[in-house]
Image 1 (spheres, helix red, strand yellow):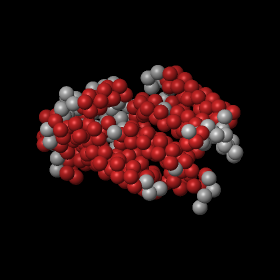
Image 2: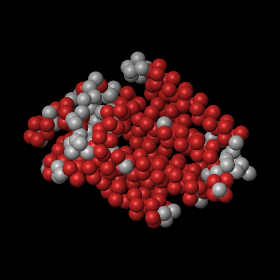
Image 3: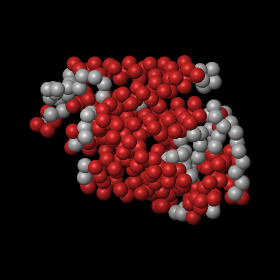
Length: 322
């Protein structure tokens, strides 16, 4: 009971202004709002996109008002959780913008072929098609958002003094990935292979599809054991919100790597070791289910290190920490 009380105790020195995590969201909103105004007649449902931003701004300031009236850990947690939950709303935006540019998958598929002499996304699932292996891959991919939630709850419950920092790093990283996806229209194997035909992929022929994905969202069915529980979870999530966008670099790999770096920074060994097997499965699964090229995984690892240290440095500067 005493442990629960600390979440409701009024803070003696509550944060007066917006949180760093809220500022980074507003910064991303400002950038995409400017882009929306320039492309207003070209995107689908620009009024809906604009109204969505207005609603998010209202919600953000409303939660700030609630916190100012009841400044405790629980209301602060609500502010952060709201921003994390809204990441799934921001994601489809990247497609609305990047579909206006010529697709670049033919370049990435060619680089993949040059690097590995094949298309790992095409061959991986064919070489390892056993239902148990397939389910492990889908388990890894499905573990992405639970991993984010687990790390966020860990910092809130056991490393509260680092909760603001951790949430800022996670949100900043997501928005950096989203900006890349807007500027770099790469759909990924599941969409590109469907567009050009698997036969051409097997031949090593990768034609330029131009603006094909501006009007097409068809994808190959995810490979693997279709009767599996985790397969169905991944397939349902894909049908609900996936778009031909966000291939390079892999944010699944990048953000999950950042989560482990955050845990490593506070020496949370138990949770780190618990999540490590899921992390390994996740990195493999992105290629197995044809969501990413193998070079997207490499890009995810590299970008994760850069984004983590950059966001951490910015947060320290904002807080006046050495």
